[in-house]
Length: 140
Image (cartoon, rainbow, N blue to C red; front, side, top):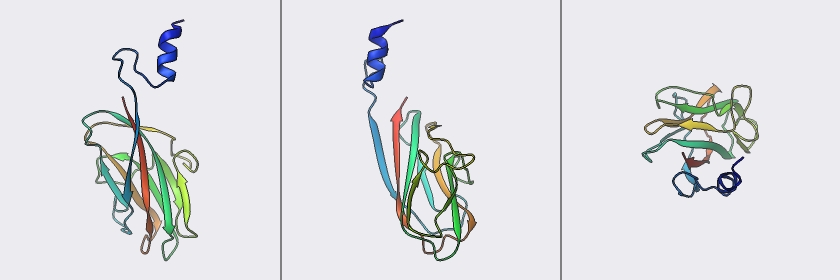
């Protein structure tokens, strides 16, 4: 219907503002905590609504059986809207919201300014877990 607008959007340019939509990423170390949001807690302090996907690069598995959930929330509670039940206790793994989202996980989630991306122990114990999270995001 509007070929120029469609082309701009496919190129990652907001047709209304003319501003380029640039994908950014943040790399954050994972913690081996069993607390809610204890494995990772990252604040969206961009001042904008963003859309995120998440990659977990677990380089050392937890010392016991463990699964993790990841999602978006207030930073004080577990959430599984990005990744649901990723096994990090069997072997080192690279998993994420695009490939291993699980039952409740989604490829992308909207994160309002002031909200958190969190990763929490879902089952087992996270002791010994080592790795990094790559949070990829694009501003609205």
